[in-house]
Image: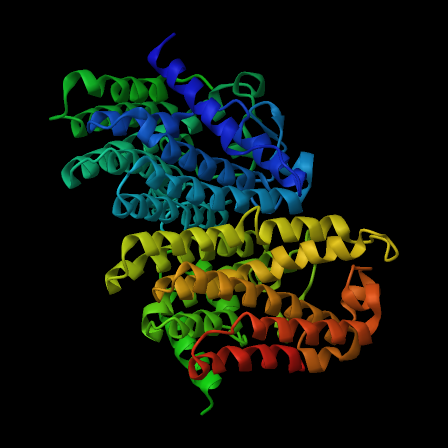
Length: 296
Length: 296
């Protein structure tokens, strides 16, 4: 089994255990599990674990943080799909959370996943991670959620629908969205892994820069796939950005230039990893390549 | 100025400073402030500060936690009023958050308030509160939000609308809702105040029991006011519970028995405060009396 498939398997097991199906309010746990455990690429948890190992920590130490960031991701996906946001009924080939459980339960499940992410991270003290580090981990996680992260990105996204593609501020606006909506959580994944693993401030900041590059790259690839692939290939509604007149990279700079930009970001991401142990850095290099070359 | 009015004033000042109106995504900050700074009774922050002082801490030490719990409260009010929840258009005499800002921004503001509450609490380390205590404070806060708190209460509430009033399980279901939806956050307020102030485990648990009593009492009084007061007197739509066929205490046991139950809880709450310094306990006794006797 490949390094990444192996990691994804341990992450899935830990996520499965983190949200037991339990009474009372069984329906909330079902809704949380529905989105959290559905087939995901587990990019953020893998990044968290790899960052921890890169700075000399052990995978098991970072697992709670890795689960936490994936919970935050699941929480944001539930909100993204709501009728008052992107109004999407299909995600990863399955009906979206509010379609299955109703809007009320979907919104509550999204909140509960944020709360659980922090609770999960706080259990790190049981592994003898010093409380200062655990607290820093929690801070990075909620920063990625709030007005410096996902919330800011999604609000800017809401404000940007129908925005003119020839607007001078188009690219600036688009980068703002993706830095907050996509890169912030990848940063949190990398940075919390490095914090928990005992990385130095310099190492932590290098990993933050790397994660920001792959975050933007991730979104570029996503935008390109939306206009070049079918719904079947993607497991979600293709061409949706065009219909919603969303600001996207292909719309602003064309498909070819978008691809070039993604490749440039991949090179930049690699540069931020210079100085780290060459063996240990391999997983992060493949993760970047994987994001660049993914087909769905 | 009375003790409580004085406390409310310092809380309002701290809340005002905690959410500055700032770009980018100004609208999110406006929406957060709209609900957070609207005329509230500040019961939870006052409880937090009083609990801190009761165990020998200084008010200023608990202010960040006090602001945090009020942010969690504001976050839950925004969700409560959404069309897919209670569908209310009036709160404290003003249009509800989603009426003013739209559903998308309202939901995002609600999330951002949870994130900010945790971020605010984390600043306690700057006041030399030991990181273990800060982490415990954060844990109590998110526990009050998630599947052991607000989310569970709201989910049960959603499931309970239209529930038969002669159901045997009616009272049990109702208490479940209020223990999670109302009491959990009051518990978090009292307990975080006591943790930050350096209280012993015994003191912390006494305050938790006291807060649970006043939490249930708060809801009993709320239910009674809904059927005995006008919308003008309440600053929100009166009689709404009846129209929605909500499970309430007056519906299950009548107005008189509901009032008696509230008085019994007030006596119980006082009993949990036995053993504390008599002078310092006065604010918590008046807070309980205030909740019992409030008219809106």
